[in-house]
Amino acid sequence: SYMQGCPTAPSQATEATVVRDASQILRTLGSKVEPRHCALLVIDMQNDFLHEQGKARQEGARNLGPMLEMVPRLAKLITAARAVGVPIVYVLQSTLPGGASSSDVWIEARTRARYSGQDMCLDGSWGQEVISELKPVPGDVLVKKHRYSGFAGTDLDLLLRSLGCRTVICAGTSTNVCVEATAWDAFHHEYYVVYAADACASWDMTLHSSALATADRRYAAIASVSDLMDCWHEETTR
Image (cartoon, rainbow, N blue to C red; front, side, top):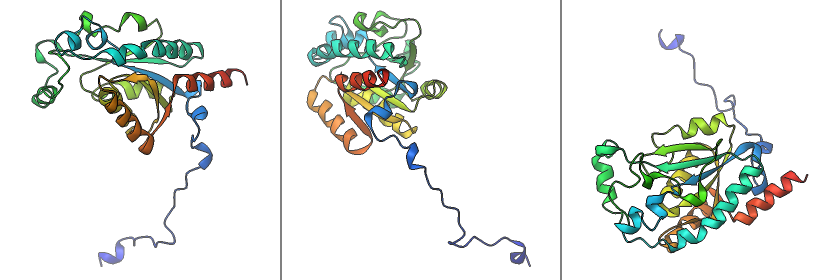
């Protein structure tokens, strides 16, 4: 009969069991941020978000204080990362002219952004450029995104895989929006995630703290710039 010709399902006793090699799991901050397999994501550090003449300030009256206060720490982190060979990936918001990148869903969502402006970081504009304090240098990677996450509709995952990355260190603005969206997606793409906590900021630091608390309890390591620099110093002095 037909049923006699069909293979039977394996018994529970004979089913293969996948056992992960525990030695491959990165459990410490130091192991996660080894320069050979991590990258630093610098997210949305752009004129329209952070400059006094940018749209967030001029059109949205956004409080830039917490964001500007952390810029020197992020600059220090970028310099330290470059010194030990950690790739720097600038993840940049981009709005295409004529609404080409703006769906009805995106437009509706953007109406909820109280402290923002229209056509933020218009492609090719001064507002889209990285702030002068953190300018990219030759060898840095730039990825443009049209949504909150740096992974949505971009080649970020391909670039990170090509670099041999297992971990992403997330820094930038705003902690509770684009940084968090990118961090969650990094985790969902099977990367270890580390927040450079004092190199992230939001217009509302209670939202910043809430995002970090969720990350700490679910999917990411939370570290200071000093913690990360200490790890890299230990790595280079071994």
